[in-house]
Image 1 (cartoon, rainbow, N blue to C red):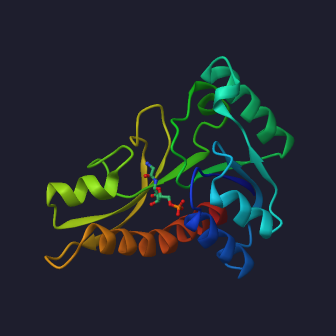
Image 2 (image 1 turned 90 degrees about the vertical axis):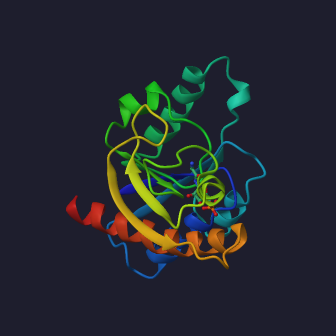
Length: 189
Ligand code: GAR
């Protein structure tokens, strides 16, 4: 199964998936493309160093979100992508991609959805004072972080924790959870 990872930033989740592929833990997965909406996103250099095809698509270069997504769709079709894996992609997926890839777009979000959707899941949960947070992998629908949940893993927040320690713990569970979910989804076919 050919997957495209969409990412806007650092790309540690990309690295975790790439490492699992390299270690032979995801035999059904071909890491066929990394797409970013930010030209300086470190994930692009990381993927290029791994010899994974990369593409930057500038959302500002198009007159509308539909035109942007039509171009993205063309790129995905050229690479024969089967599954879109959002990993820190900070843009809402619109109708063009949803229609073409319904049920074939997954996202990882750093909170226990449906709590704390949006751009700042870790900080929002920490600021609220919840004692348990976690990571969620879910299918993408047309809401914000609202699609059917595939898997979740929890983290306990203790009085000693800071936003930095929770962020670190979050990344650790994400890097385990996302490859595990991919293994399960791709084995099912
Ligand atoms: C991850 O923690 C991911 O859950 C979050 O962005 C981070 C990306 O890190 N995604 C969202 O907040 C989506 N709403 P990475 O670039 O190091 O993989």
